[in-house]
Image (cartoon, rainbow, N blue to C red):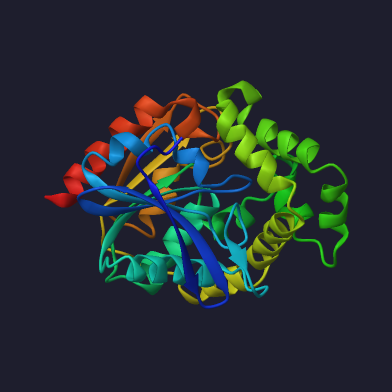
Length: 288
């Protein structure tokens, strides 16, 4: 799926991050979401690598990345990715990110404003807005936010009983039919889900989102980040159902622009050409 890309295992504090690096040009970091891996970028990575040095990573504990502790806050995951870019020799870079990766990118822009040149955030609302909007309608669709954050090992033990069943339910519940995923990508997600350490990472990620991540975001309430920001969301998902995503993100990124795409949650795999066109235009504009 990533012909011409080279794997790197990068040691950071408390983790080893798997990255695939390809192309030449302005550095571009691609961050995936739950319950996926960097494989989600396969429909667009080669095209982006024509004009950028593309770095597609697995978040700590996800995919082929390893976590050596249980710190899964977005602050720590953002630090991981900044260290990866350090090791690869990139002082500043653009970030295109989906789902949990996009929340990581938001925290990265807050904590490392001199490093992030621009962001593209795919199919999320700010974390505090999700919790504020968590009524019965949203809870039924985002049940994993509540289930994975339950204390103890109950969620992971239940998932590990049949991890592929759980994965398929998660993908289908967020995005619709599984046939939107290329067989090679779906196989990569299934392989990751069979790893109990990956399932543990999912749970610790969402546990952090229910606790310390909310505290970090509350402490930064009102702060804005003055970088170009692209916001994309799916018309058939939930992100735009309860509020205007652009209004929500302009409270954080005043220069945010964007639009909806006729897709569910997994925009890159459902509408790769449309996403690629929007991201390319955004990156070209950010470079001027």
